[in-house]
Length: 237
Image (cartoon, rainbow, N blue to C red; front, side, top):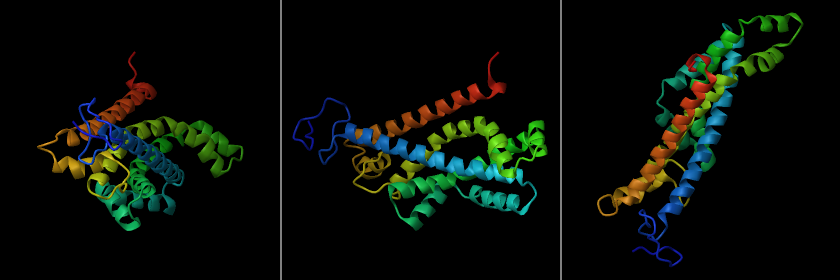
């Protein structure tokens, strides 16, 4: 039996409570909420910035703007995601919004590459030449003719990156660079009591690990489904 902080015996669920009497199920639910919020915010911010830079790079192909964007992208791609996120958090300090910003920075390069290739294809279409012929400005061509036709890969890369963002957040928490205590996170639970009581209270590590696995698997399945739906080449006849 294990006693919760309210004094009520809580052993209805197999994961029970931790050594401090805190209900593990409640902490995992709250930690999953934090992970999903961090993933959604970081992916949206990172991919939005990457999409904008990708369109700019394609529109000004061959100019100094294109070379500068692609040079920065190559530098970020050369660094492992987790190492880059740890470096950013180490500089700006651990907090919820800093973790969001660190993960968002690591997700920018892939979006730049994908959207740039799609935008280069869109720029070859005749309606872009028609818009330029009637006097449309560069800004109007980019945001009203090129960017809307890059939405399908944008949605796909967002859904496909949610699992990566969750794994990055929980890895940072596991290494002590994520959301600081007392906010519960599954990575923090694995790092602290999960390792300490691995042989005597297995649920302290098993329950957060299963939560991480289920969340990442769910978002990966969602990304595959959206890719199959939005990509005409992958649709079944």
